[in-house]
Image (cartoon, rainbow, N blue to C red; front, side, top):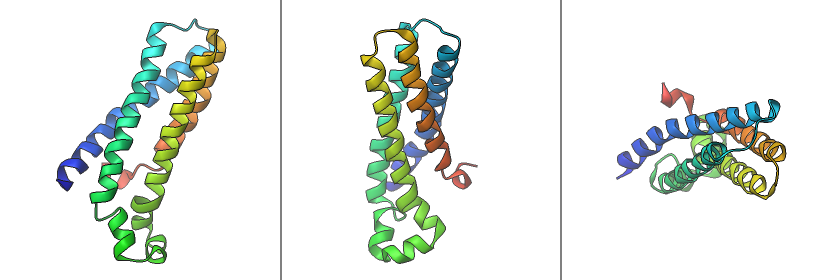
Amino acid sequence: MYQAIQHLHSYWAYLVVLAVSIATINALYSFFSNKEYSYKDFRLSLFALIVTHLQFLIGLVLYFVSPLGLQSISNNSMGVVMKDSTLRLYAVEHPTVMLLTAVFITIGYSKHKKKLTSHPKFKMLAIFYTIALVLLLSRIPWASWF
């Protein structure tokens, strides 16, 4: 079961990076070029939100079944985990930053829906999705990706 969840989490991550990147670039481009908000923009931001939330749920399950997640904290002490950069990344940094990523995407999506005109909608999406993308890219375990 662990291997299947790990593979799903790893491959779904490519979709998340792609969707959040496209939604962020679209929001930034549309904000700076004063485009009108359209149904395509709504769908891009919603798709990024959905795949991010699904990835977070898969990651949450993985956190509880993985030997690098909660089990590494239980088997060792928190002091040991914090001194080991690999354990710290998987048990503390990655889950925390990915939670923040999902929160920023959710806030950006929620705030943009309350705006009535295009420019403020794109501004909210651009700000929050850019922060989320930077956070997302900062804590991906790149060594296991390549």
